[in-house]
Length: 380
Image 1 (cartoon, helix red, strand yellow):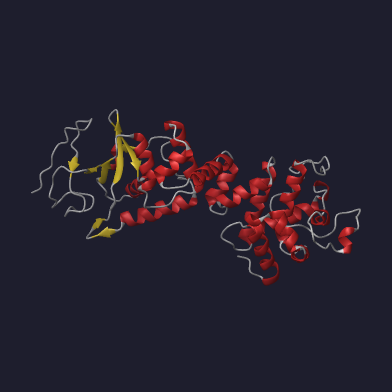
Image 2: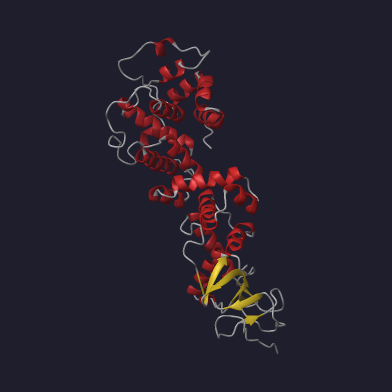
C-alpha cells in the first residue's frame, strides 16, 4: 500500500501528496502508485488561484474559449472508468500561503469547468515554478506547448517584462528567442488595439484578425469612429458572403460605398491621384475636371493615400465630419457587392502600376487579390 507523506516545506499545515508523474498512479489519484518526494505534487484544484495581471492571454476571445472547451472535453473523457484528467503538470508559486498558478491557465480553466460540470477530479498535478518571478514570466512563453499567444497578448506580456523588470526589447527578444523587431511590433499591436474595447470585442468574436484591425486603424489615423464603422460593416459583409473573417476585399466595399455616398469628404479624385504617378497614361475622361465626382469608386489603398495626403497639407476636405455622416450599420450590405465593383476593378486594373506605386510593396498583394476577386471570382 502506498504511503503518503506530509510536506513540511509548504507554508500550510495541509497534507500535500508527492508522486512520480507518469507512474502507475491513476489519473486524478494515487491508488497503486509508488510514492516518494519529487517535483510533481497532486493537489486539489480549489487550492489554487490566479494572480490578476499575470496571465496576459485573452481568456474572453473565441479562440481561447474554443481551446478551453476542447481541453475540458479531453479532461472529462473516461479512461478505464475514470476521468482522463490533466496529462501535463501546471506550474505554481506560493505567496503568503496562497497557491498561485503560474503557467497552464487554459488547463486550469478547463479543470474548473469540468469540476463545475460534475466531473470527479479530486487532485491535479503541479510543479513548483522558479523562485525568480522574471524567470516565471519568461518561461510562460518559452515552455508554452498549447495555444499560441496572439500579437496583442504577446505585446501585453512584453510590456510586463519591460515595466516590471526593466528589460529592453533586445533583452526580451533574446530571452524568448525572438527578434527585437518582433517584440517592438507586438507592443505596437497591443498599444494600438487593446485600448479600444469595441475593436477587442470584434477580435474576440473571431471575425476580425489582429492584423486586419491594425491595418484599418492605420488607414484611418485620427478617426477611430470611421475605423470602427469600416470594421463592423466589413464583418457584416463577410457574414453575408459566408466568409470566416472580414478581409481587405470586404473593407474595400465599405470604403467604396462610403466614398460614393459622401463625395464631399473625399475631394481628391482617382484621376488626380493617378496623375501624380510618373510614366502613367491617364484616360482623357479622367483629365477633364468634373463638377461632380466620377461614378467610379476607389479601393482602400486610394483612401489611405487620400488620408495621408491631407495629413501632409494636401487638399482639405469639406467641413463635414466623416463620423457624423456615417450611414446606419448594415445599410449598405445589400448593394455593396454589386454597385460599381466592376467599374472600380476596371480603374484599378487600368492603372495597376500607379496603384502599386501608391500603396508600396507591403500592400501590393492586396491590389492583386482585389482584382482577382472582381474579374476571376476568387474571393478568398
